[in-house]
Length: 218
Image (cartoon, rainbow, N blue to C red; front, top):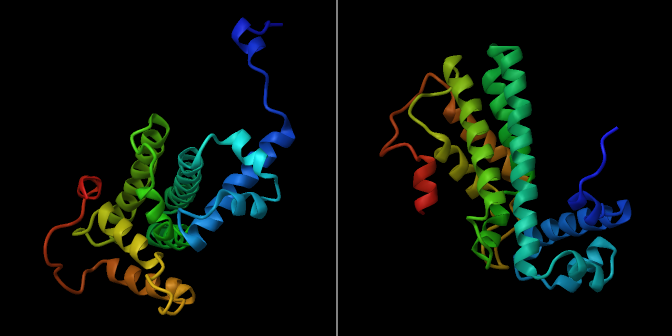
């Protein structure tokens, strides 16, 4: 039987209840960032998570660290949706576009667009954790689109950036309190958008496809 290293002995494992509290805090922060924006008071996040204020600050030194974890959570969940869709497409190429469609609707439920203001908050977008998560996301979405393209079901004049822009725009709340709540129309409008992605193309798109590099530069 192997023995623990000195480093392992010095680093105690987090208790199960501490891990649950951390997960609740991140989940609550994600919900509240979507509902109220990135400046929501952390005291309100604690209340939504059902923990004390001290518990939030024990897990997260400041707001930027909490934002970091929320972005990681959403990115990983969207990547998991794409990986499930890839598995379905690999099992049956004839359903590749349907798999892409399911991925887009599942990602919309993660409210990617509503979290865009969070990305403007004071945190490091080039942190290795976030770079790894972003690269995983980009790889799996491109892989999913390649499968739909190879099956002849996805038009060839679009790129990953086109998909991500539309998904972000259609899931981002309209600014201003006077604007009506459009959430109930998101999946309806996404379906219209997805119909436009199907091959054969019914029109020629102006301009060039939006690449991931275009998104990074913007």
